[in-house]
Length: 471
Image (cartoon, rainbow, N blue to C red; front, top):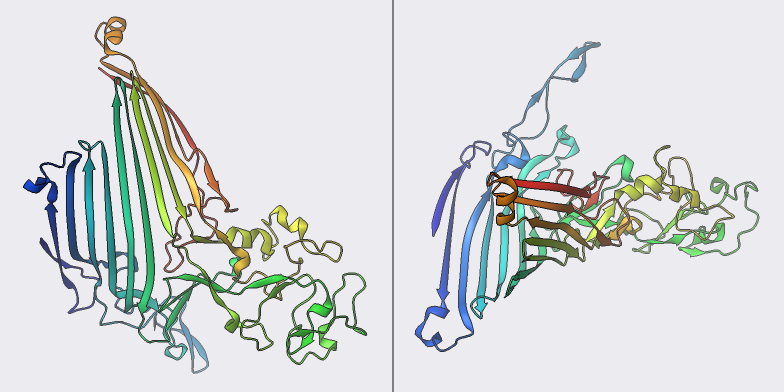
């Protein structure tokens, strides 16, 4: 058992210190007398633990509970004259304190046949209380920066398993280790039952928020509109009560590009105000005849259903071999590079996908029409940009050879005692359906933006040739 007493000067006065205990208990059953006759079992242990840990303020800046007086770019008109001034950048939070994670687990460790075969299994539950997130103040406050606040509670629980098999056959020694881990996440509460937090908005990536954190759902779930193909003609766009009119006659259709001047047509539901053939059709989930923010829904999570790995190593007559495979399954990635490449929000850096954009003569496509300023919001956050992020990757592969010492002694007159040559590769190959640069995306560092591919630099495939010498 342990007890920690930690202090962090960045928290508010009166909340700078926290006490965090932990305890563990194990029972090595294999050492009990009644197990003496069970020869195949070389190790059997039950264990459980409970502990608390505080999250320091390192990820939310220095003295985040305070308001800072900002004197740059702050001006006011007084007596008809423009004068310099100062302003607060955010509201203070004199109650900011430690974010505390409490974790409990129960597990079993088993070794069989003199530990030739061993495995470990564990179930855990992790509860985070006083969760720290940035809260946006009301517009009436006059500040725009978010204030770090202890606002809620979140639960993670899951199962971890690992197993190893070791074998020795004369000069061949090899072992295989595999691991498997699952996790389930739920936000239990925020500061109010109806509170939610959205993030990820960027003008280059559709301009709408990408994730939502809300009680009853996984943290920073993807949240947006659901697509339903591309409008092929005017009759699919304009309708009463959300029902297409079919063939529409006597409309001012431009013979060159097939567009319609909707301003000259009576469209009381505003369905076709900004929409033209070739635009994305979004589902009207609340059936009110208008596509608006209330038609958004939860679209997936950046958290995988499970992660796994496999490590293989072997030695034979001076040769050594290691291979490490790693993968995830069941997670979702928001492909921001697809927004950039297909969205045509900027007049540069488009991908060749836009050469297949919809036109009146090219309708068999899933790329919408090319149009200035995206009036229909084709690049808004939607399932169009969400992809399966599952992958299996060979993270590392190494093959080496150690020259026998008796051979080295004769060649180098005992000067060189060890000589090993090897070749190694990282990220040799990846199996995935993800169309972005790299399914193993990093983070931009901003809160609530995990799983968003903003075009982070992909991991390189590397090859290393080496020589190790000992004298």
